[in-house]
Length: 142
Image 1 (cartoon, one colour):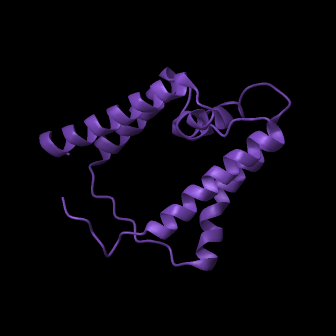
Image 2 (spheres, one colour):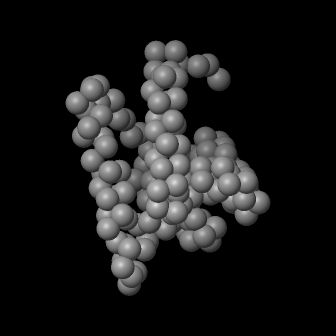
């Protein structure tokens, strides 16, 4: 495997990771909540009184790409996978999120930072599943 130095963007990746970590830290320090996207979005539909911060968080996720465009040109996005494969992948991610009681942001970012054994197990499981899925698609027909 060769590294594509033309499209390798370590500084923007580092900045993005730092912003995700900062947002997660701010949410837990200021609001006592975990920045798990599946829980935040899922509980928007559930009865309860704490929808304000959830709506603000989701609005930030949706509006961030437009803010990014103010400072940089948007990247070219090329999707060269079959639609059925993308739909299957989305359904499997949703199933895994429900099965694991959380998503990559909740377990992988926040849970690991809290040294949660459950989050470590979940993160190892979804990373292994992701690696296996890529291997299967590359070898048996994506």
